[in-house]
Image 1 (cartoon, rainbow, N blue to C red):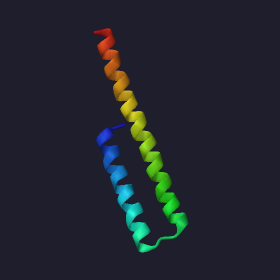
Image 2 (image 1 turned 90 degrees about the vertical axis):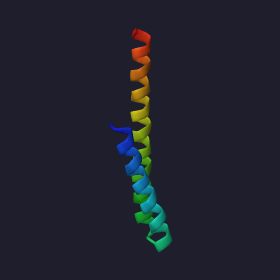
Image 3 (image 1 turned 60 degrees about the vertical axis):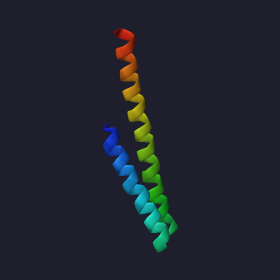
Image 4 (image 1 turned 180 degrees about the vertical axis):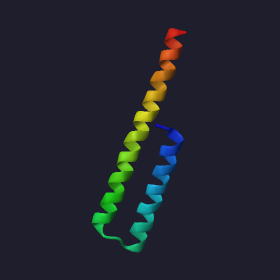
Length: 62
């Protein structure tokens, strides 16, 4: 997972959520966008964690 790609995707979902709220989308549509946003945030956390674990492994074995 690429951290930069996930960050850009999350920003896009956040913009869609904000725009949807401003235009008066239904709560179901907003919930779907919010769910996708939470999923993206979880994937971002996993990507950062894996990068950190990789760096720690390099430091410990070096």
